[in-house]
Length: 79
Length: 443
Image 1 (tube, chains in turn red, purple):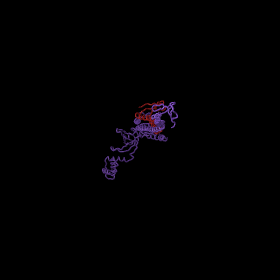
Image 2 (image 1 turned 135 degrees about the vertical axis):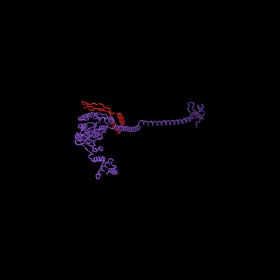
Image 3 (image 1 turned 45 degrees about the vertical axis):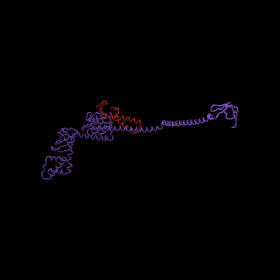
Image 4 (image 1 turned 90 degrees about the horizontal axis):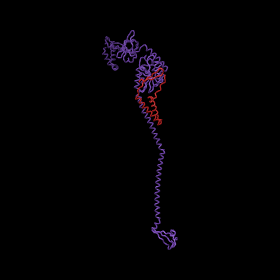
């Protein structure tokens, strides 16, 4: 069996959502310098926009995972 | 007792009137009338329908006839367009007319075959139109396999449960937002289509990866295990193991303990959606969550997008609010600091000093001016005094200045000028040269 394929380096919705939750918790805790706050806020804003865009444009991707005879595998797009 | 009297009797009873429908009241009236007649000497004569209703009531009142299991062989099976099934159960000596209504047929997993031995459940009653008693059947199971399979299933279940494979504590939570969803099922089944439809509607953000496998037959179990391990090794957030409804034999491969054990060894949580609501298989016990059907499984593993949107809006508000709060707090501190800074700033001191300097300068200028003015005044006075003291002014009033011609010495004492001495007499206008005639030393 092959090693699991490395996750996409691009941002994924659930990661963005989790990071957003963390950022808000940090911001709400209030022990940050103004600089840190502003950096976090900017990042949070980017994440919110990203998540909203994802929600508005999402289309289900369906693919098929097939094992080759040599133990490796391949992914075929179904839709 | 005539039926109409009996009917009227039951009509009068308020309890019966409210608690029973007309049909039932009629039946009770018929029975009552017939019972009364037993004690009358007159021979009773009934209509066919009255008698048939009476007979039907006898079945109704016999609880054993309401809940019957009967074994027999299928014959005369017919399946008209109405959707109901009609057949006869028989053994070597008797026959039993049977009907299965459409509602029960839809839950029926077996197609009946002529001559097949079955175990049927239902109730016995009379079809009044033909006067025929028959079995109103709601469950039908083929006789050969069921007993066997059920016993084996029970045995397996108990053994794995005893091992602790189904314990609640080892069940893993499902991710709130699965990015990658692994589906283990057959690619060509309706179940996979149903799953895709649910996911497309509910959570199109997901990436769905099918790990295809046969889901039926003797050899399916190891292939299901392989598909499960393949997708788990590939790496997904949650796995849905699914198969549409089928007969007990169809679903039997999901009672393979190898699959149940493989489920407990995956890294990602596994949800099962196998068969219909009423089916329970071994994999359901081992799964982290168990859904009644493939579609229900797809719903179980995904959040509802409407709720996600709501939460996102809420987070957006919280983000802005918290940032504003921080900035406002800092701005306040900044104002404070700026104020303090202004107080201790050299600029302020310089400004203060400059002001004081200006004041001093002002005072200086004023003081100088005063002094100059004062001096000027003094000077004027002195000038006047000086003028007053000018000897010329005396001359104009008749005084004269006498000097010795010889040496110019002013003569203020007679002793300095003896008789004959030449003197100059300075007058207010012009002067005289004179000689002393005589002198008088007395004053």
